[in-house]
Length: 311
Image (tube, rainbow, N blue to C red; front, side):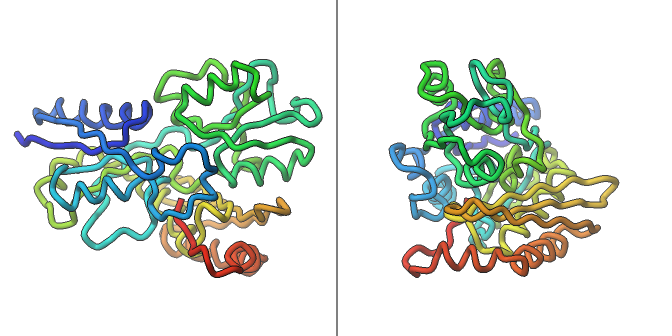
């Protein structure tokens, strides 16, 4: 069988993901080596994500290694992967999806609703911050960077009353002990692709593509395609809080999405149903634009200095 080199970021969660895919490939008889690649996003830890104007900040260096044939495939959190890939690359598989929702973690508090007036909450995401402020404008929201262990350690040390993280990462690492609330989608809409892993290859590498086909999950592929079509239709990214969550029921899709203003906290919502993920994502995106998302995006990028970034 083939010898496959897997590219991954070096964080604990990224390595869990890479090893998860490697184990599945080894079960098929492949030899697998994991190459750790440090990305721009890993090197800039003292700045909020929304202020880092780098497209593909968690993927650029990995794609360079893929292009140079130093690795054969890359394992990404799908939400980190830009919606527009270079024609040189392709997503060979999207694995079965973990819980896509966000969770509230706290030592003492059971839910967003039960947080005391003016409580300090940590999050790395403008999307989470904007939706949080929409329901609890009294909360003090602070940037939170670092790996999962670092974030949980800061919480336990009392630096925050609560922090908000993705359920998927905590489940994968077995660090669920501080989860107090799984936040409903209608309260906090997840990031497009959250909870899904994407396996990226060189477009022309048909042999590696065939080795990875068994990893693809049809439901995850369809729902995330719908969410990413929505994201692409809006042209937004880290500077614009955008959420999208699709569910499939017997190939029929339901999509809910939000765009929020990062300063005012105003949240725009839209949803729709359909059978084809791409037109559905596009149509819900157009609904949001018509309801005021175009103005939000225009205001965020009004200076013309910062080009729209992908999450």
